[in-house]
Structure formats: structure tokens, C-alpha cells
Length: 166
Ligand code: SF4
Ligand code: SF4
Image (cartoon, rainbow, N blue to C red; front, side, top):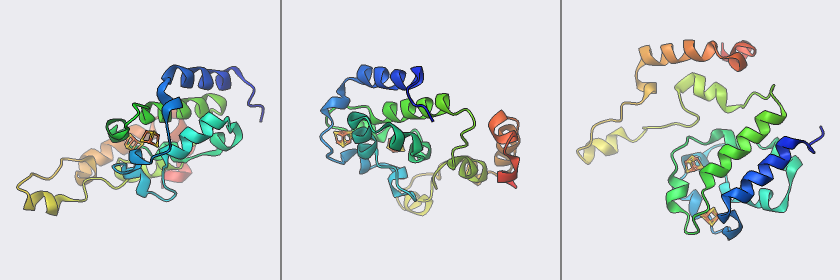
């Protein structure tokens, strides 16, 4: 695959625009609250940042972990250097998709199955102990989950790979 495309240049241009990425000193604070860092394989934002900074295009292109991100933005709150790791992840996803429109992120089967890339809202017992209500997530509502799955099946990427969603 030829990665010397406008899209590749755009990734690096966008990363330049993110600016503070150069301030990342690999401290791992961004992982401490990241639900996807417990995944298999884990999403390690600091490693993605290194790959971008070292220009490891081929490795970065093969990375599936950015697709495990649940968009919670905790990493952005935690980062002491204002690096904006979540924005970095969005840029990497966009760059990968632009270079390969047939790419099917592995996390999409998880999204189909439970509405999220990761197990969420699994701490209702603890919440109850603290006097908090359960979180109204889609994985607890069969009707809504079914509607969501029907909607997802109508998207081109899922419809073209429907064998993955039986
Ligand atoms: S992105 Fe921020 S929190 Fe994460 S390793 Fe870099 S400096 Fe640390
Ligand atoms: S936004 Fe993504 S990378 Fe950042 S903490 Fe949440 S799941 Fe992790």
C-alpha cells in the first residue's frame, strides 16, 4: 500500500495543528481513567502518540486499537500537558478510513452486540451502595438495542459485511 498520499500528509498536518502532542512525555496518566486501556488488546494512547511522533506510518496504519475508544474524553481531562489524546485518536481513525474505505474496525462487532466498544455501566451495585441510580445505557434496554442494531445494519460498512453480525 502506498501511504504517500494526501491523506497521510493530512494526518501529519493535523497532528501539527494539535500542537501540544510534542509535549507528550509518555507519562501514562492518560491511561489511568481510560476504559479502553483494559481492552484486549489495550488502547495505549501514549504509544499511539509515540508512533505519530516517530512517523511510524505502516505500524500506525495497522493499529486497530484507536477503534476501541469510547469517546469519554477522560484522557483529555487527565493529561498534564494538554495533549488532547482523544482528538489524536479521532484523527488517526479518519486517516485510516480515508486510506482504506473497505476497512472494517473489529470493534464494530462489539458495538453491534452491546452498543459500545467496551463493557460499560458494570458498576451498578457500587452505584447503589453510594445511593446513585443505575446508568441508563443502551445495553440494558433490549428494545433500544434492537432498534440500534437495525439502524446499524443499514449503514454501508455493516451491510457489506453482514456475515460478521449474525
Ligand atoms: S498524552 Fe498526556 S497523559 Fe498521555 S502520556 Fe502523553 S503527556 Fe502523559
Ligand atoms: S476518550 Fe478514548 S482514549 Fe480517551 S480515555 Fe476515553 S476511551 Fe480512553
